[in-house]
Image 1 (cartoon, helix red, strand yellow):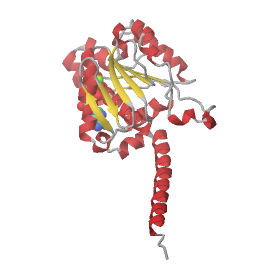
Image 2: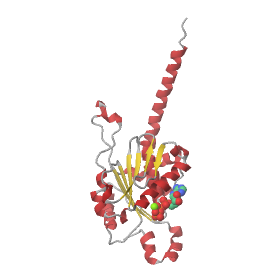
Image 3: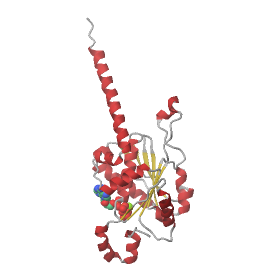
Image 4: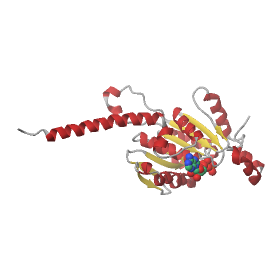
Length: 267
Ligand SMILES: Nc1ncnc2c1ncn2[C@@H]1O[C@H](COP(=O)(O)OP(=O)(O)OP(=O)(O)O)[C@@H](O)[C@H]1O
Ligand SMILES: [Mg+2]
């Protein structure tokens, strides 16, 4: 009698694969809704306020965060961009900084840190390029993070997630005429081309504004005020001050710099 062992094994492997795909779908859905828990599963330990920030960054299509110096803004931006890239294949992320040096540092220092220190993250990244002309990180699933200097020369990039690091020192005209224009086409996952998904809603283009505090006379403050007003409706504007080391800094750097860099609370 002919043995069915071979076809039984193929069936078993197929079932196992289907089971794995189902489980993976569930996990990815869970992580997409709970980015702070995804960070934990990747091995990154976050403070409570960072967990809340990461969660809220993803809950709104626009997000503004003004915080004191050294509170982990760049760390959080890099982690958020990496997690989004891992969870959403073919995602294009642009992290824009005011200067070329800052843009390169975002990749060279922060993304490289996550790549080196967290093997589960490193396993998802296929290449890190720190070439000053086009610093970028590519992922095995087709996603990409580009670090872009906020200037007129930056025209031509495309993104699904725009992150403006230290936005308050950028020129508002460049943000309006160049950077926000990167987000013209939503992400196109392959399933969207199937007829049954023709009416499927597209993902919003996200914009994240993060900065240290600046003067009230500058446009960054107007942005925060406008944002604050619409917060109840759609967006969020949190403020964080690290009170435990503030006094030491006040003595060290003097009142003017202290107010500018650490006193983010305003009337
Ligand atoms: N959850 C965390 N786990 C480990 N290290 C952290 C965490 N959060 C922040 N850090 C570290 O804290 C330091 C300060 O973070 P970061 O440089 O991102 O702050 P920043 O707010 O961007 O500072 P600046 O205002 O100077 O740009 C970095 O060395 C960063 O790696
Ligand atoms: Mg920073």
